[in-house]
Image 1 (cartoon, rainbow, N blue to C red):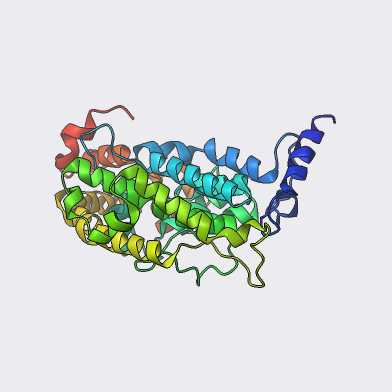
Image 2: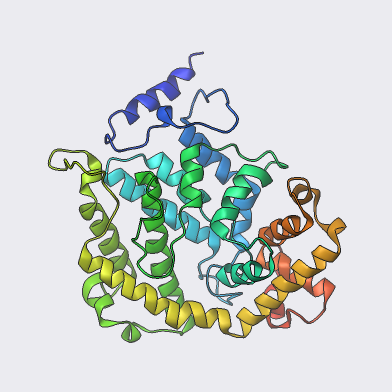
Length: 362
């Protein structure tokens, strides 16, 4: 078939990448073997499967940080995802790594987020017997829940990057828990932080929660005093500090390269991250909207546990137990859908959101 030469040409281009780059023809493969696409590499195919899946579409109505904001310009989980993919592509291209793999991981990394962002995740984690982590659930979605339980059958490299993207509170550059992670996966892990720290800060300014003068002095001095400047400083520093990953002359090293930041920028970013936890993330989750979101998630979980017949078949079929089916169903809801269903069950429970969301079309 003549068109098969397109994929082969694309795979041949990957040979010009760094020796440290992941190559689609060398992928560890898929759980279920498939005939290769005639027009796309395996990583490009994964990217397209993620973009066209239902979980990706639902991200447009899922909270990033600010729950049910009134303005049109606040970040959603979808816009966050697009920013992560864009930053990851920029870094991967600059370091001569596999841009398609970085993009696919970036687009899929948050598919498993609950409604109401990390507040919803924390509540579901506290009431679900198996606990809940959005990174693990993102993998469950692509492996078991999409396409009526068949999953997306993604490559090992994309799946590994998705499940490994989360970072504990503290030094977000610590890669000790993901030693096998591809460099492209490391790029997405760090790009996630670059994206959310900057756009969450912009949203905090927009909401009047913070102003430029309230930031720790290290943030302005090292990272810059404007949104675009801060992102540019971080991304440029990542590329310069990770230059060994390019495999180019002058980048030789006996040790396996890692994606990193310079000590000065890394310290400033960690200061900003801890500041955001203290001033934005934790207060937002503990405020009246956060408590209302927790009540909605708890009600939905308990109600569907008592009424398993109301859980859609697409969640019941792949689940090993009723509580897993409930967690899958609740986690998949958008903010708007969760509020509507909870109001049908117990009118008034989501009163705080009524004027903002209940009248909006899905």
